[in-house]
Image (tube, rainbow, N blue to C red; front, side, top):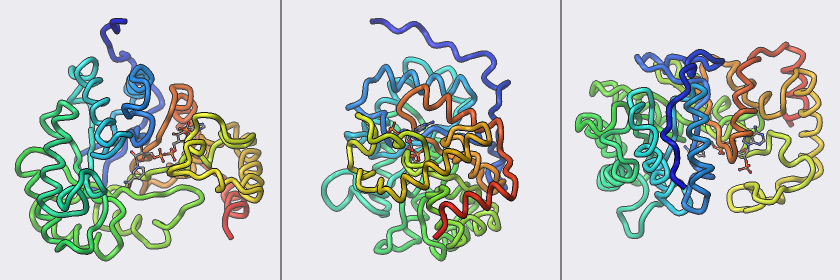
Length: 334
Ligand SMILES: NC(=O)c1ccc[n+]([C@@H]2O[C@H](COP(=O)([O-])OP(=O)(O)OC[C@H]3O[C@@H](n4cnc5c(N)ncnc54)[C@H](OP(=O)(O)O)[C@@H]3O)[C@@H](O)[C@H]2O)c1
C-alpha cells in the first residue's frame, strides 16, 4: 500500500508539551523525548514504527534519541528513522533534535567498540548515512572508556562539532570524575558539553546518589533520563502476568525472573497511589522524574501509539504532595 503524504499536525505546539532549556545552552528540549532503542528495528513492523514517530511529532515531541546499535539488528533503528525521514520528516528537519551515540559494541574487530577517535568518527559517518542526515543535533559518547585516553575521546567530540557533523555533544553513563574532566575539557575548547544522559527512575536512583545530576546542573549541562519506566516495570503492563510480545517476554534486557511476588506487591501499591492521583502508573512514574527542574527531558520508550498517548498524559500533573512522595519512598526504598 502507498502511504498518504504526511502533514504534521498544525496544533503540535499548542498542546500540553513544554520545552525546557538544556543546561546553559540556547537549546530547548521537550520534557518528553522518544527513544528508539526497542521496537524500531528491522524485526518490527515499519508501519507501527512510522505511526509512533508521526504521533510523537504531532504531539510536540521534537527530540528523537538513537544510537548506532539500536535495533535489532544493529543499525536498523537508524535505518527505520532514515526511511521515515525520507518519507515524512524531511520538511520538518529543522524542527527536530535528532541524536545518536557510539560507545557500545557495534561491528566486529578492534575498531567497533568503546571510545577511540577511530570508532567514534567512523560510527557517526555510518549513522548519518543510515538516517539520511547531513548532521545530527547531539552526538553522545555512549559510555566512558577506561582504556582510551579521555582526551582522545573528548577531542573526537570537539572535532565532530567542528566538522559540522553534530551541533552539540553529550556524554552518557560517564562516572562522576570522568564527567568533570569532560565538562572542563569541552568547555575549554568552546564545545561545551550540552547534556548528560543517565538511567533514572523511581527504582534506580543512582544518579542522585553519585551526584551526577547535581554535577550536571552545576556545570551548566542539561540532564536527560533514560529507562524512566525501568523498561516497563513501572507501569501496569506486568500486573497480571507477562504479556506476549512485551520486553520481559523476550527476556534479553528485562528478565521475567525480575517480577518476584515482592516486586509485584510494590507495583500494586504504586498503582493504587497513581489511581488516587488520577494517573496511570506509567504517568505517575514519568511525572515523578519531571517534577525536578534539573531533569531537562525524559526519554520514553514505547511499543504502540496507545502507550505513547498514555505517557504523554503525565504532563497534565507534575506536582506531588509531600505525603505522596513519602508514600512512594516507603514502598520502594529499602
Ligand atoms: N544511554 C544509554 O545507555 C541508554 C540505555 C537505555 C535506553 N536509552 C534511551 O532511553 C530510551 C528509553 O529507554 P527504555 O525503552 O528502557 O524506556 P522505558 O520508558 O523505561 O521503557 C519503555 C517500555 O515500557 C513499556 N511502556 C512504555 N509506555 C508505557 C505505558 N504508557 N504503559 C505501559 N507500558 C509502557 C513498553 O514496553 P513493551 O515494549 O514491553 O510494550 C516500552 O517499550 C531508549 O529508547 C533509548 O533511547 C539509553
